[in-house]
Image (cartoon, rainbow, N blue to C red):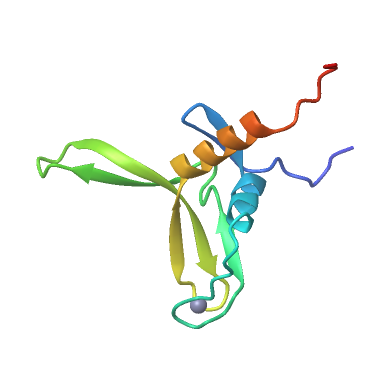
Length: 110
Ligand SMILES: [Zn+2]
């Protein structure tokens, strides 16, 4: 029997697997609830992979046409007007690594 449930979007960033749920939990971990600066709506849609297993990447260049560096992002988009914020995927991966390292052990320690 087939199921309609799709695998949750995930990426590997800096050696850490991050999922859409991680991105949502990361944003929710901050105290502030920020309304949209354009329309003041407070509903944001989160997208980790705007394309199939693709993520937003902004390249930097020295002007000679070659891309040397870039920054990777996940996005939040205002549900009302479409204003879009960029959040660093590296920061999300760093947050998840730190969260895992401080999680209580599930082992049989005495
Ligand atoms: Zn808005």
